[in-house]
Image 1 (spheres, rainbow, N blue to C red):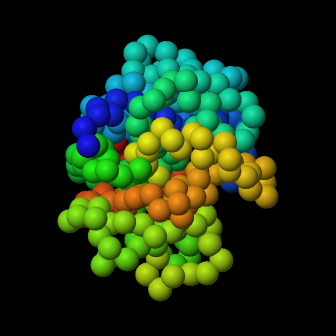
Image 2: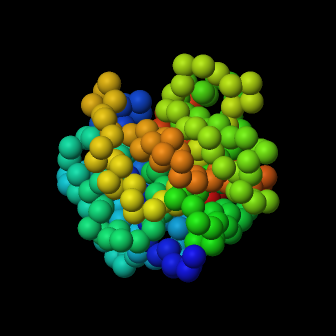
Image 3: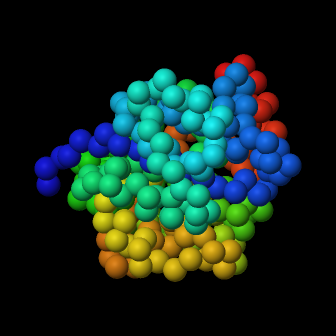
Length: 256
């Protein structure tokens, strides 16, 4: 299979920020300060470090602070979405930007801290480019208490594709059952553009949002190869989407 260059990234950043109110009544969640810069800038710098310079941020049309902050960054363009339809809905808005290419999705509340984050992302991209697979997901072990708020993955090490990537056998958004040793996505996905057609057929959840996880699950259940790639040991995935995670991230990024 010929390798195709992956040059585009999508960052869903148009969410409600409900769990971070009242802060997000005044500033959107991706623009919350983390060290000396907003959360979103840390993620964009990670992408640029991996050689990705064509980045679409899906934002609310009235998020003027975000628009103004990145207006001079030629790598960043905005696609507006006021539908509050969840990450899957935001990704669907980028179909004409992505066109027929493979692309990266990084969530706007999941910064990585540690050395080599862009090198890890490059490896994630390489796994997708070099393998005949439909997607590669960053994955990491989580505490059992986190299972109810994560996209939890399952895999069988005996069915590993190669030394780096592990074939996923399932992915479930906020599962009711807790695995013995739970692993979850680290909110970095390298995907085929066929995900758009699958998202269009995917049902919205109980809160009216379209999630990415059920679409990826459908790909797995259809027999497509989706690989998980464990987060490098020196990297920590932070969650700035809730107060506890945000305060933990503030301490970790204090001088960044």
